Image (cartoon, rainbow, N blue to C red; front, side):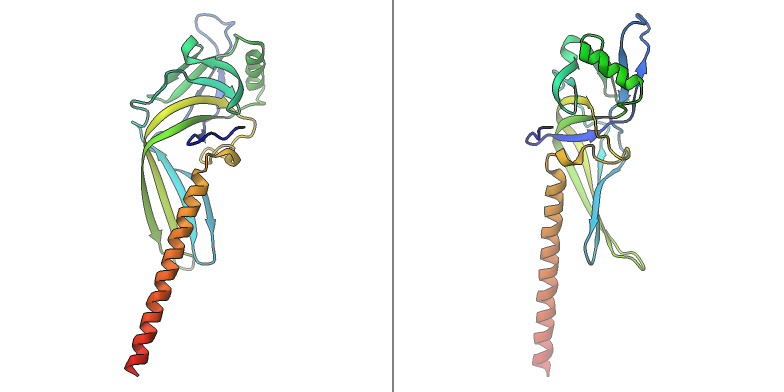
Length: 220
């Protein structure tokens, strides 16, 4: 799966086969593609002194003004297009939020429909570019445990929605990033920011300890 600059990927909920009311021969799949105002854990790690977690929240108005001019449905965010909004084979409802795709238009689309119906493909993800975000960093002291640094990233606006894709490597659970190895670098960026903050904290602590040592030496 290609990594595109600034583009991020997040997991969707399970999606399902749906019978069309107007034509039972249509091959329709449906799924909720995210949850609003509900924090989910992106990742976490720990060093000798601290534990660190990054959480994310998508605001209920994040898609207001989003460019959804031609959203497509793919497999693993690449290759063939199975459905798209421009030809009305893909529909998006941002109030739920939910997607619905008609897959009967191509041979591969019909094959994907069968894979979904058979339970071989059960997860999806969507590709997007963030418009605006807010970050909140809290350090929690815990008795008998390492302190926890928790960063919450709230996405308040999404600039562009590119695709909704069925994925071959789904997330382990609904609060994890899908196909983490192809993340656009947000996790690496956050980790780098955390490590830089840790370096500054350690340098400050050393400087304060040295100043205190010099002060005590002068007093002696």
